Image (cartoon, rainbow, N blue to C red; front, side, top):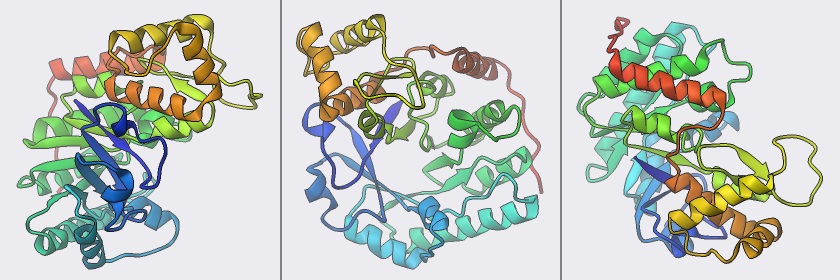
Length: 317
C-alpha cells in the first residue's frame, strides 16, 4: 500500500529531497501553476479539491472553475469536487449531496478528458446508501473513500461503534469496487497495517509536519510522543528512552538516510522541527507494524476477520 504525503505547497522541509517519496498531495486552494516549481517535486502530484475547507469556510466553487485550476496546476491525480454529507444528515439529504458529487465528477471528467479524476464516496451510517454510491462509480479507474477520519482516528462525539462501521464500509468498497481504492486522510501508522490488510491501494497523511511542529515524533505502529523540553498542557506523554531507542532501531533497519549515533539523534529530535518532520514523514511512509495501542489492535484484528467473512450489504434503492 502506498502512502501519499500531504503537504502545503510552500513548505520546509521537503522530504522528497532527502529520500524517495512516490507521490505528494496538495490542496487546490493552496496551489497554482507554480506548485511543482515551489515544491521542487517531480513525482506523482495529487491535488485535493478543497471541498471540506470550502464547506467549512462557507465558500463555493463550481466544478468548471475547479477544472480550470486543475488544468493550471497540471496535476497527475485530481480528486473530484465532493459535497460531504454529515453523519447527522437524514438519508434523503445525504443522498442528494452524493448525487451532486456525482454530477461534479461528470463535469470534471468532461472538461479534463485526459486527466485522472478520482470521485469521492463518503462514509455514512446508512450502509445501504454507501453501497449505492459506490456502485455509481463502477466505470471509474479509482475511488477515494472520504469522511472516515472522524470515525476512525478521532471518534470523540461519534456514535458508538463508529470505528467498526467505517471499517466495514471500507471493506465493502474493496469487495464491490474493482478498481483502485484510496482511503483519504488515513495514513496514520496506527491504521496503516489495517488498511493494508483490507487491500486498500493507497492512503494519505499530512500529520508528519503538524506533529513535528507540536514537538512530537510518530512511532512505528502508531502513537506519538513529545520530545522537546517545552511544557505539555495537553495530548500524549513525553517519550521514554526505550521508545526513542525503538524508533532509532526502526529508522536504522529501514535505511533512514540521515541518522547519526543515538545521542546525536536524540539531540536533533529535541532541537529541530525539520529533523522531527523528516523522521515523521519516514514513519508515515514506511511503518506497517501491527498497531501498538489496544484500540487499534482490535480494529486490526477486526479487519482480518472481515477478510475471512464476506457479508454482502443490501443496497438502499
